[in-house]
Image (cartoon, rainbow, N blue to C red; front, side, top):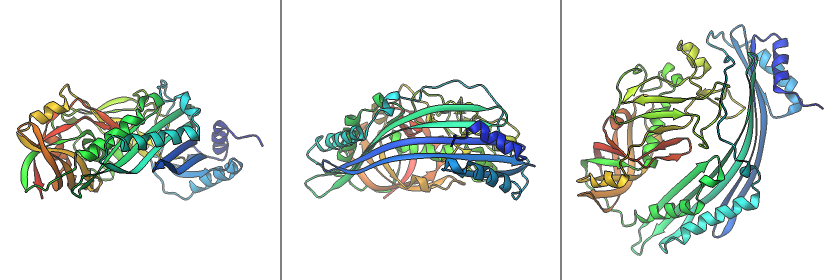
Length: 441
C-alpha cells in the first residue's frame, strides 16, 4: 500500500469540511546504554514513528494521531468528527507560511552509530570516573545515548517543512567515600547535536571531582550571606524563571511574571536570551513545532522583561504574533509554549574571580527541590550543598543547609555574572553571585 503523504492528509481533511488543517509527523531512532561495574547494565534501541492531525472547523478544534500508516483514514475521520463536539474558540488557528533558514543540527556521523559504539562510550564514561581517584568507590549511573529524527510539518496555508536532527549525550553520577565514613555524590552531563562536542572522559572525571570536593562536609549555623550559584544550580533557577515567560502560563494566571511586561523585574546585570538558532545546541531547530521560524530573542535585557514567548494560539489571544516557541512533547499531543535554547548571557568575569570577591559566603554546587518552587508566587525553600568561602578562598565543604526566598528577588540580587556559561540540555547559565540570602541549618 502506498504511503500517504502529509500533503495528502491535509487535502483529505480539507475535503471533509475542515476550515484549516495541520499535520505533524515525526520518526526517530535512538540508542542508549548504561554501564555498571565494567559491564553493560542496560541497552535500549528505540524506534518511534507517528502522525498527528489538527483541524479547525467553525472555530472548533479537532485532534487525532496514529502510529499505524494503515490507520491514516481513521485518524482523519476522528479529528474531523472531534471538531463537531469541542467548544468554540475564536483563537484557534494555524500559522501562515513564512520563510525560514536552515540551522546546523544534523550530524550524519550519529546516523552511523551502532549499539557497540554507544556501549563503548558508556563503559569509557564509567572507567574515567572510577580511575580518577581511589576515593571514587562506585558509579551510580553511567549512561550514553544518541539518536536521529525526521520532522515534517505541513498545513493548509501552504506551510511545508521537513528537517533532520540528531543528538548525543552522556550522564554520570559518582559516589566518593573517605576513610571517615563520609560519602558524597557528584554528577555531570554533556549533550549536543553532534558527536565531536562531547568529551566523554571529561564528563566522568568532572562528576568524580564534584563528588570528591564535597567529602568532609560540615553543617553551618543559620546566617545571612552571599552565595555563588554554580552553572548547574543557576540553570535550575533559570528553568523556573523561563517557565514563567510562557504566554500560556501568563494567560492562565499561573506565572509570577503576569502583568510585568516592559517592567524592570530583575538585576540589570542579567540578560536572558532564547535562541532557537544556535548551531548544534539541543534546543536548536529551523522552525518551532507549528512550522513558525525560530529566532534569537532577548527575553530580559538590563533587567527589563521585553515580552513573553508565544505559539500561534497564545499570540492570537494576546493580539500579537508567534515568537516561534511552539513545542510538543511528541506527535501525540498539541503544541504548548516553551523555550528553545534559553540562557543567561555570560560576562568576562571568571568563576575564580567571583570566589575571590567573597569575604564570606557559599558556592552552591548542589540544590535539592528547585522544581518545587511555587510557579505562581516564585517562593522556594531548598536544600543545598557546596563550599564555604572565607577571605576569597574555599575553607571547607558544607552540607544540609537550606536557602529560602523568591525567584524574582533572587535574580534581582545578582551582583555579578560569571564567564563559565554551560548548557544542561536546552538551558544554560554561567555562575551567578547573589547578594545576601537567608541560609538556615
